[in-house]
Image (cartoon, rainbow, N blue to C red; front, side, top):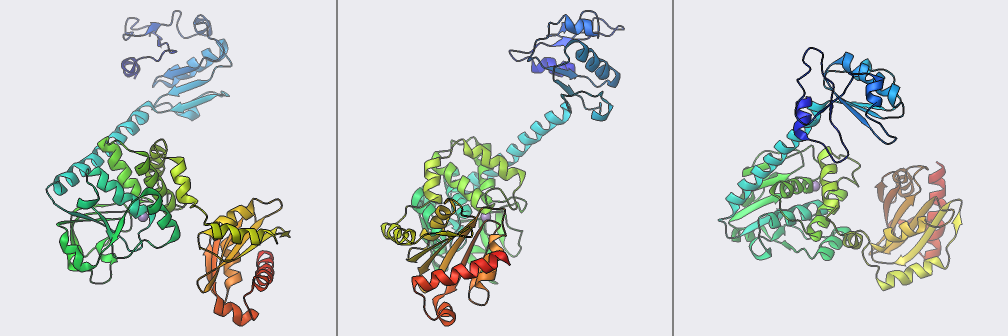
Length: 449
Ligand SMILES: [Mn+2]
C-alpha cells in the first residue's frame, strides 16, 4: 500500500516517511525518507512536527498502527491522525481525540466505480448519437402539460445530439399550462410544440423523455409504441418497443440521467442548459427532499457551478404583473397579524401572484402563518406558508377546504381551491370582507385543531 502511495506522490506540504523493518532495512520504496531510529516518540520528534501538521498512517499491520499512534501522541499530542488501512479496524485503535480511519482500497474502488459509471453513460451517448445522426427529423416527446424535468431533459438531449429546434423540436400532446412551467419555458426561451397523433408522421425518429409510451392511455397511437429511445425515471412499463431504453426508477429526475450523459460526454454546458437541469432536478425532487438519490445530489452539485442564479430566480419568481402589485397594495392597506396569522386578500389576480404574496407575507414580524387568497376565474385560490415548527400546512388546508373544495401540501407550504359557488352557498357572498372573515376564522380553528 505504501508503494501505491509512493506512486500517487506527495502534495506540496507532504512528506513520505518510511519506517524500515529490522528484517529488511533496505526495502524503502522510492520517494520515501527513512524514519531514523525506528518507530518511537523520539524519532517522530526529530521530524520537527509543528502545530497544524497532520499525520497519515498507511499500513495493514494492527500492532504497527497502534505503536505509531502512541509515538505520534508522545511527540505531538495535538496532531490529528488519519489511518488509511483496509485491515485495521477503528475499534482496534487506541483512544485518540482526533483520529479518523478510512480504507484506502475502498476509496480507490469508489473512484474507479465512478469512472465505470461515466463509461456506461458515455456508451449510451455514443449509441444515441449513432442511432439518431442519420435521421432527418427527431421528435423529442414529453408528457402532456410538460413539467420542468421533462422540458429540461428534452432540451438537454437536443443539445447533446448537436441539433437545433427545426430538426429536433420538443413536442407534446398537451401544451405547457401550469404557471410555474410556463415561467420556465418563457425564461429559458424553450419552445414546446403541441402535436396531434397524426402529426407524428412528419418525424422519422421519436425519443420519449421523462415518460413512457404506455402512459398515453390503454392503446397509445401506433407511432409511439415503437420508438428510437425512451429515457425516464418512472417505474418501468411494458407494451412498447424501443431501440434504446434507459429507465432508472431509483433516480429522482430524468434531468439527472441527462446530466450524467453530458458529464460523461465531456460536453460544454452553458448557463441556460445548466439552469434548466438544476430546475428540473429541484422541482422533481422538491429541492432534493423526497425521492432523491445520491446521483441526483451529485448531478445537482455538478450543475450548480455552471447555472445562472439570476435566470433561476426569474423562473422561480416570475415577474409580478402591475395589476398584481395594485391588488397587493389594496391587501396591504388592511394588513394585520393576529395570533400569528397574516392574511392577505387580493381580489382578482393572476394565479402565480398568490404564492409570491404568501412568501412575502411570512416575512412580516410576528407572522407564523401567511395566507394569500385571490380570485382566479371562478375559484377562490389560496396559498399558505408557515414557519415550519407549527402544525403542517397541508393538514391545515385540508381541514379548511373540507366539504368545500380541494387542497393539500407539505409541512410548510400548501394550496387550497374553493369554487366561488360553494363559498357563496356557505357564506352568502364572496366580497373581500366576507372572504377575510371566513378564512381567518377557518384558519384559526384549523391551526388549533
Ligand atoms: Mn420527472
